[in-house]
Image 1 (cartoon, rainbow, N blue to C red):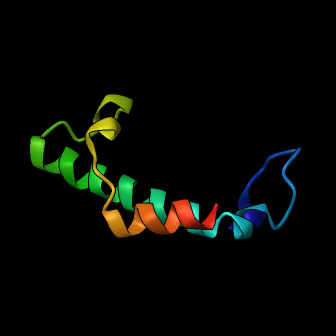
Image 2 (image 1 turned 45 degrees about the horizontal axis):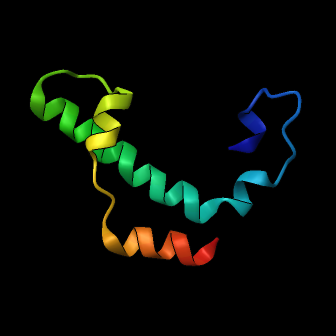
Amino acid sequence: MEDTLRLHHHTPGTLAKLHLYLRQRTGVIRAAAISAILDGSERITRRQLHTIHVDHASETAYRTST
């Protein structure tokens, strides 16, 4: 995936080091997408993201890994 990023200052391997954080955030994005479908808005906004609750196991795994 990193090879497809067109960022001039990106260091290859950075995303691999962030795998736990990215996995946790992927869950948030997925939950927000499902919410957007169910509420009919069909879009993800910052406000909506703040309403999404990350499950305890994911949050704990993230906090212990940092």
